[in-house]
Image (cartoon, rainbow, N blue to C red):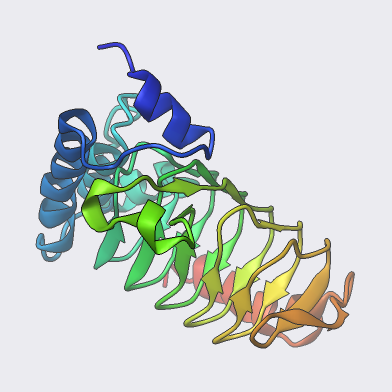
Amino acid sequence: MSTSENSARALRGEMYYAFTPELVAARRRCAEARHKFNNTAFASRRKQIEMWNDITNDKTPLPPPAATEAEDEDLLASYPWVEAPFYSDYGTNIHLAENVYINTSCTMIDTCPIYIGARTLFAPNVHLYSGTHPLDPEVRNGTAGPEMGGEIRIGEDCWIGGGAIVLPGVTVGRGSTVGAGSVVTKDVPEYTVVAGNPARVIKQVPRHTDEARTSGALAALERDQAAGK
């Protein structure tokens, strides 16, 4: 099915109308997939990924199942992990790289594309808003008026703290941390810690500390794995 010019304008961040039959149907499709994802308890890792792919409408087949569930989890270890409940408008505009973790109660208003880089972690209640409305109330005009937005990009190896909000058009640079409760209104430089409302740079991210090994945590993990725990 071809995409209308109205939908193409939405993806480009230009003014468009959200309550056309095409976009209402797209949101309903996503809502049905979300409902299944959010209300299926104790799903296997494979089933969880399949339901997530239904939300994003990703038709890429998963690798064939392994012999046991534990082996299957190892096989799928690099796939993004999204906890329920989760909310999005369309799902199709969300792009998660490998080893991404999205904790509970995340909201992604994916009017425009949202990209999240590899190994990035979200705490609970993170909200990404790629959509917005005109300031002029006569133009805004409730559900009859136009909307617009801006692409959101979260780089690789980021950590987004609980309750943080990222606004349209923002890029969070690689390796950065966004403090809990922050409202990110402008781009975040790479390898910085930002916090506050509006978020501002607090300090630089420490690098090459090797804390996992020097703390003993990595050695403990290796011992547990060797013991089959």
